[in-house]
Length: 279
Image (cartoon, rainbow, N blue to C red):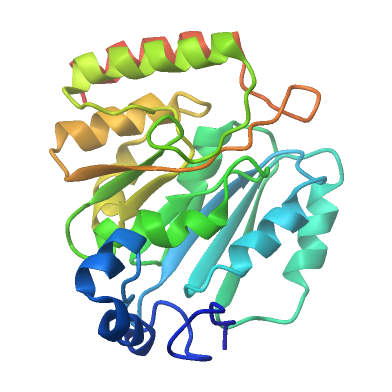
């Protein structure tokens, strides 16, 4: 049983259940509920959270706790991509904790570092959920926003959802200007090839239905950060229904462990052209 919101009409009713939603709808009305992101998630719905991990010993436990507290039944797939900072020992301790039926855990180890894209491909192979979301192992993205990102998929309106750091008024940490310009340039170029109007192609938060991943995942090839433009081009080419929602962002510095660099930007540029022209 999960904590109810302080103002919740349903008392201790778990959030996002049909009873919880009905209690709000009867008092606020359906229109207000839609504006506030109050809706019902089916009891049998399962969300797979795929977490690529590389040298994240300082943040992994806190991130995992944040994921676990989201009031949605989850399968959490942690793929360690050859960490050398003690993260592997931490994962073994986490894996040995008592099982939680609301948050099933899968730990997969890469013997050598291969890159974020390779870790995600491995994670997708283990995904059993009705929807799958990508979650970085740092604390830049807030798992409490999962329900908002899932709403278009649960309601049958979307096949893919992107969380945008540049859309709306959610808070974000002010950091690197040239990273911002590079992101906007890559997103704009990607849009030119895909004919989409995304504002943040490079976002971590991408959500897919199981059917989309079953079609797309076996075709993925990029091992590093080229994953972002590659999968964007592939979902655009197949004309899936894509939604974009605003998210918060607490970026970290290179001293805090940020890994992406200018070489990854060049690789993303190549991937935009490569996958924009052919499948």
